[in-house]
Length: 405
Image 1 (tube, helix red, strand yellow):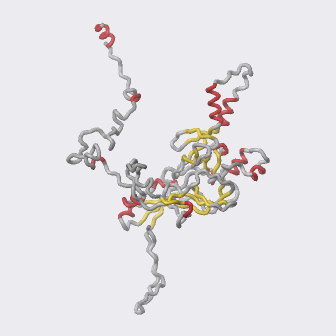
Image 2 (image 1 turned 90 degrees about the vertical axis):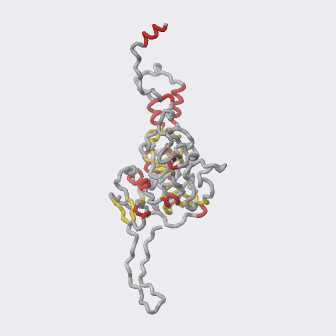
Image 3 (image 1 turned 30 degrees about the vertical axis):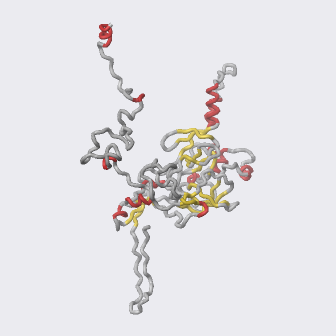
């Protein structure tokens, strides 16, 4: 897209009458990187680095944000803002791990041809990357490179298995770079790790050896307080939660901890005086024992089965929401069509359309299909209508009833 102009250094023209072009300094599309806080990159070590595996969440303010700006030589570049991702691979993806995106999900239409999602259509040609969200291949994998994926906001990483040399795409964690080694423990704990723990499960050693950034683990193997992404919802199925750029969840509690507190009451009471648990209480304990509590970025807490998959770290490209496209054409490249106000349409196209001048026809705000919007009387549930205000009872209400009787 925006490339520096080549310098003509020492190039001899085919005309003999003209001398060789002298060396001209390179004239670039000047870029300015707003480095408010440049993070210091530490060299990767073979040992366990807690700061790399349990990194804090990205700052939501302007601290630590590197945005590339461009010299406004055209109007479309004046407001163009892009996060700095110089570590991305500049070439094409692995062809056998992709397939073309033709027809389906490009125009916002369903199988009958009707538009079900507005403002979709057009866009540049794409190839869908087949991403492995479950990661059931055992053994260490080498990160070949980090690539851009046009089908998602986060970046993807190309992995090569050290044993089978098989290539696969996975979601990249924030801070993951080429040359690192990641591993999936979804098939089970490897034999060398069992031998190092002495044949028994040591939670401390297991967390120190497995809970590294980019590793895929079952939820019951992840320590409490760890940041995770690409979280599964059902055992044996790939990750479905926290897959967008910069998203993450936090492991709040494990079912074994809550079950231990509920099953083991205080020892002051004798065995005969212990109250037996009801069927509902036993079912609740069994459900807590089989599930892990995680907290999403929205503040919602969810119970996820302990055998579901999750990846340690934060989804890559956390500064994605600072992007500014700069012009309407760049939105069309991304398969985004214009959004037209209903007030500017004709009467046959929208309830707000038609009329002379800026007028929506003296009607309540409605959607294109005639459904009331803008939090009116008909948009609130019935149990919320007039429930917040308690109307006082009239003083002479009882006297009127007696007179009528």
